[in-house]
Image (cartoon, rainbow, N blue to C red; front, side, top):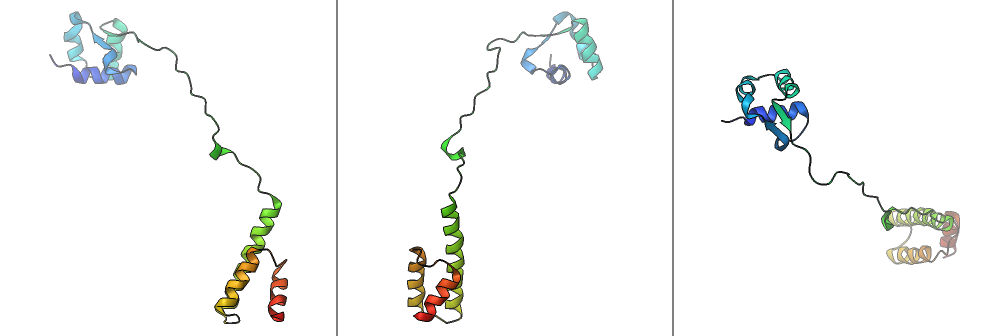
Length: 133
């Protein structure tokens, strides 16, 4: 006697797994005739369908999240921020000068090295030093 579909329907109606559903053998003809969710609910209330008790672990313990090294956010020092902003500005200026053919490739690489070494305080300082060269 196949009652798999009835078991599926009962598990959906009662909100439990199919393994926990037990059909009482004396009320199998009534269970076969049950079509709707309401029929299943009535059979459960009458005692024709029962549930197995849960075995095993009762309490679900939530895992505590540890803060790893990748999650630690630190403030970036002001000096680094200033350095990054100035360096990007100066490199862009050097790139533009190279594109306009105002400086050669060798000069460009020298300027890049000087920017890396923080020789210039500002864009104006860079352009002034280029005039002297």
